[in-house]
Image 1 (cartoon, one colour):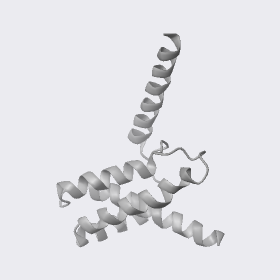
Image 2 (cartoon, helix red, strand yellow; image 1 turned 30 degrees about the vertical axis):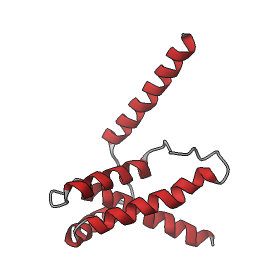
Image 3 (cartoon, one colour; image 1 turned 90 degrees about the vertical axis):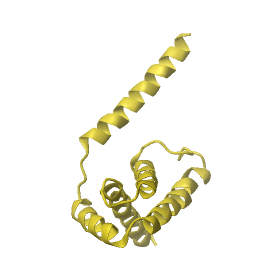
Image 4 (spheres, helix red, strand yellow; image 1 turned 45 degrees about the vertical axis):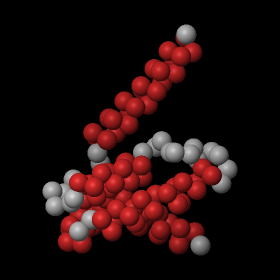
Length: 122
């Protein structure tokens, strides 16, 4: 059971990375790009719609919402584009690095921290 869940998580990671590449591919339609970018951003973001510490519901959004977004986005992306991006994602899935994404996430957290400090100081 544990190995099955680990394999599912790895496939989900590759699919989310494939969506990120497909969202940046010039042959992807704009509506598919928008959905793919949202799904990939949600998959890689440390911020969840429902926080994971809430029992059952915390993991429900990751278990239901993310696969549903990915499934819809896959159906909207042209098959040749998906195959090309999936191959690229498989090659890079071992150790993806995006300093720009890390910087954006760090800025979001710093902004939230500053906002919280400002609200407390008021």
